[in-house]
Length: 293
Length: 276
Image (cartoon, rainbow over all chains, first blue to last red):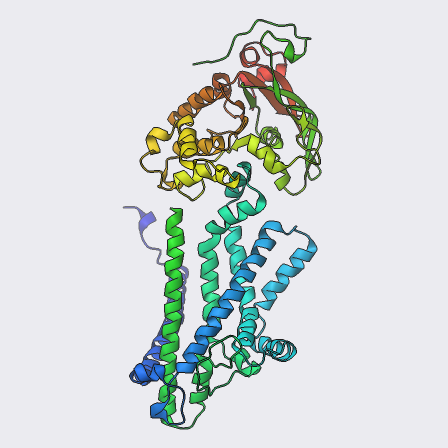
């Protein structure tokens, strides 16, 4: 019988085991807290709002009569804004990331730019709203349009896209770059034929996360003056618009209980849009990853 | 298996071109010095590399073999802080002349790397990559097949050209990389320890391939493996490091002669396994 394998029963060892156990429980509680809160939130919203979501809720304009009110213009506005934001922020963000990773010399100017991009990702969104108001809405005279809102949102999510794309590009092994150049590829052929396809899954993941944030942001759009009551379909980039979070905010701030239920219904739709956007992006990402195998 | 041409002994004071067989010099360096930052890694290297021969570069770790090889297709200039002095010549043209284009150079001087690095694309697209980036207008299928045949890989992959290059074994991947290099139509192939990541059987296949390719291409191969140098090369250059850790050329001669009757004591010590 080996004493080596018997558990240590000294007080010191017991205390150590106890500390380990306590820490484990604390960590478990911390995890559970997040999960439980999310579940309660979802349950609460679904209980209040799931009943509200039907065909006429989606296709009706907002109204002061709760039974007639819907989210048509807000949903369309969110769609317009998302499309324009993606169309502007994706190419600019990826372009900036390519420049910083593949072209820029590692000098102090580049490093200052990089640090500032990281800092921009942490700037409160309302500050972007103020910038959008004074620059896009007033100076460029775009008004409170879809375009002004999308440009403001693009600025807001650009740092996120740049940072994520840079990480993805940096993760492409140098051996692929060398292999490409050794075959007589020019620098841009190397970037577009080898580096970008290899980095695309990571770039798309970052873009999805950034766009998800844009879907949910309210403060900058309120700042630039996106309206809450829009009883027509935005039909172009220069039209007035509203988005789902603003509509939700508006309904929640009304005193009547019925409008609170409508807000819950709109939240359900917002979450559905988010999940849909995420799953589309995941499908695209998988397609890219499969083509690499 | 030793495939070294035996040539009549020649006068050692004569220049290398003076042998019976006329030698066409394809690549040459003159007083080549190379630095990474402040650190000198190559010291006055002068070497002539002859057409349609296999030239092996051997030597202990850190003697600058790979750095030297990468001077010929200007891959070193991707490394920040790298600089050189002296001449690197390709058919008597300065590879580092102001109007020399690295892209054009790399189309004529191909490279195979130490670790197989196929692109995450299909086998076909891997081989077609070079012709495509070079704007090749002809039949890609033809050039892919010809290159894979020349790299002795066609028989193994002809039925699944759509499969990813990464799905192949290590040895197949390296032959794919050789096929990929051949598809561009280079005159010279630089090989940077092409077998160091492969098992002995895959190594044998690559060595057989090198001996076949020698009929049409000029090959420069860096290797850690002296037996490999003896098996595949016509000439061997032995590099070592001096007391300041700078690489220098000790001896360059016909492979058989270098391995049987080395002139320099350091060469003899290395090939008999006394250091390195």
